[in-house]
Image 1 (cartoon, helix red, strand yellow):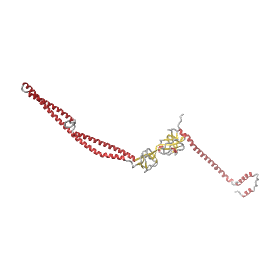
Image 2 (cartoon, rainbow, N blue to C red):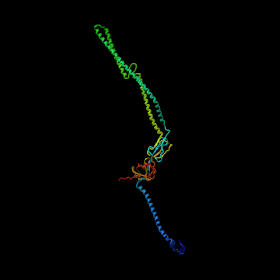
Image 3 (cartoon, one colour):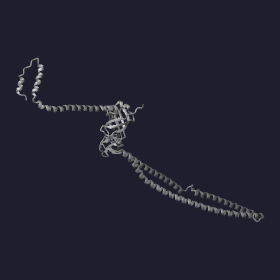
Image 4 (cartoon, rainbow, N blue to C red):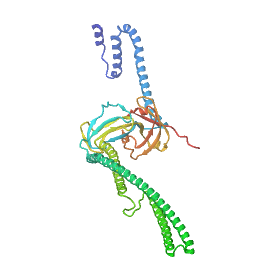
Length: 448
């Protein structure tokens, strides 16, 4: 510390003149500093030498860190624009998929077919919902069933009538056959009788002819009178005519026999067919009519049975409908709930078509003008996942993009030019809709 004697000596020094005020003030300050810290100079010399090195090193390190951070920032924020300039890439991109809207074909009440977990992938044909309509119109189905029941009740009566007519027709046919056989036998007997009569007439003719010859020779000698000769001549003529008449009857009998054998009967007291044959024909016709009615009834029953099956299917379609997924995917939006009454054509749910995954992206005008349909592209997810390759399938530009996508392309609003890329990779079919990233388009070689 500074002692009082030193302070007194300082105070007793002569006062400076006004002319030397500017120069003496600096000299006084230096003298005071040397006098005050003269004793501590030797103790603090070593500390001053050791503390100067860290004090000088720390500003250098801080300055180097600042330079490194600045270079990193310049590299990061400068590389991204440079890469965007050098590469044909999109400004924004999102993994998208087409939506399939399932509507109810009938009006009714919704019921859950099975519990569908959230984000669960469904196979094609999976029943998701059921729609019941307990008030379906079944008037036509009931009418068809009544008609079928009436015809089924009439059929046994027709079958019984047909069996009775067939039995009567068989009995009458048997009677007609017996009559025909009896008539044929009768005509054959008559023919035999006529032949016998012809033989007898021929014998009488021969006898009369011989008598006429004897009488003629005796008449020449006068032993027989002319009256006797005339009588014998008349008997010869009668016997000849009798024989001729018998032969005519034989011809008529043969004609009747041939007709009877053919089923026609000739006579003076009846027509060509007897009553038994006529009745048999009438009964055969009646049996045919009944058989046709029975066949028509069976045909109508079979037709009604088929119509009932068709109507039952139609009625089942109008009273119950299973809502199934037409494609493999997952439920994107459930637009109804079990127990709700819906109308025909009302949308019930939307399903993501995982097999038709696409990538929607927006690009700058310069990149858009360099793209063509069919160009190869690669989607690079922002989360560092596996890249997805594909091809450009749609260039909509500033026009409105298709609206049947899960994520509307209008949501990508940084650039107005929109591109759609289709992909068949397994990663795209995983239905991870909503993943963001960017699309890098392959450069096209320009022809020289």
